[in-house]
Image (cartoon, rainbow, N blue to C red; front, side):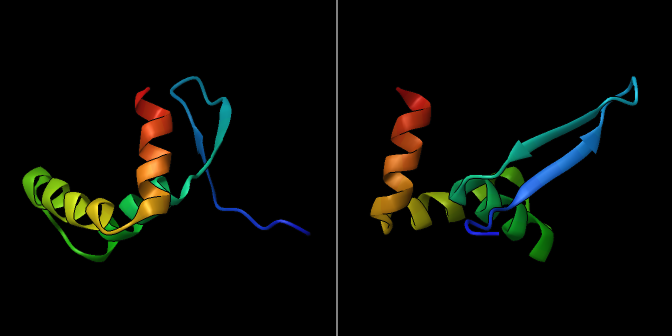
Length: 66
């Protein structure tokens, strides 16, 4: 495999198999949530800190928002 990637694969309520490629931001959020139980406020606060310090993540978020 030349370009490894992370993906999430799941079955919906009709048992159809779905998949989605994870962006860096998706991967960070899933990893963060898995590592420690957090309230939504704590996740948003941590995400805000990471995004402020990361130009690559700022560009990813900009693409999703506008």
